[in-house]
Length: 116
Image (cartoon, rainbow, N blue to C red; front, side, top):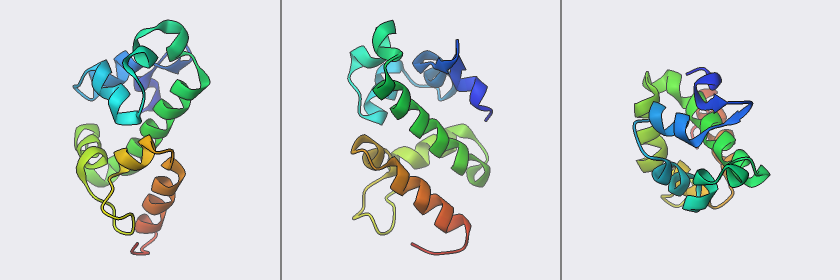
């Protein structure tokens, strides 16, 4: 999915993300480890922390979408598939705990043929 589908006005837009993934803004907030206000109040949506978390999720989804064939299946993987080598945690849980870079490294290793 093109990154522009998730953005509006030069920043990641929780409403566009929710619409694309057929979920709610509240669920998007929970998925990236943020409170409801972070995706509802314009000043909080624009904050560096909110934009960073949204960007991390979008980057991860964009990396795995070609493997799964759709953003919806990539989102389901992100939320529910335990990752090998991470104690059964999902990509969503790792992102919420601030380990998005580890998830991206894992995806890169799997795509390079290295089994984690």
